[in-house]
Amino acid sequence: HGAFLLSAEQAGPDAPDLAARIRDLQLSSTRKLGRELHRRRGTLGDDGAVGLSVTALLDQSWFLCSGMRLPIERERVVASAVELLAAYLGSGVRPPGGRT
Image (cartoon, rainbow, N blue to C red; front, side, top):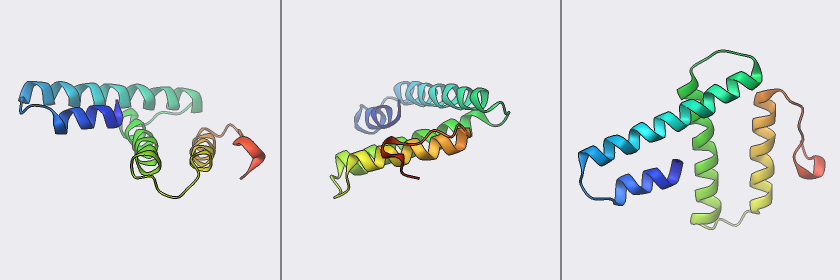
């Protein structure tokens, strides 16, 4: 999913069938994630849009921390992502260290 599928599509051979399959897999995984988030919230909505938004948050955070090696502590980024997802889910979960 995510960055790996995007990389495969961009770096792979010019094969329209492969690119279409990669897009189908990406959309399928984002819809599943969105559906699960809606289930946990007890709400309805656009599963694909929510799943894509969360996937983008996680993928871009990972890429900027790991790929570009920005001078920011990975643990703080992970804690912030946990905090954002917990707030979206309304679970009251706090990231490690109790930071809000």
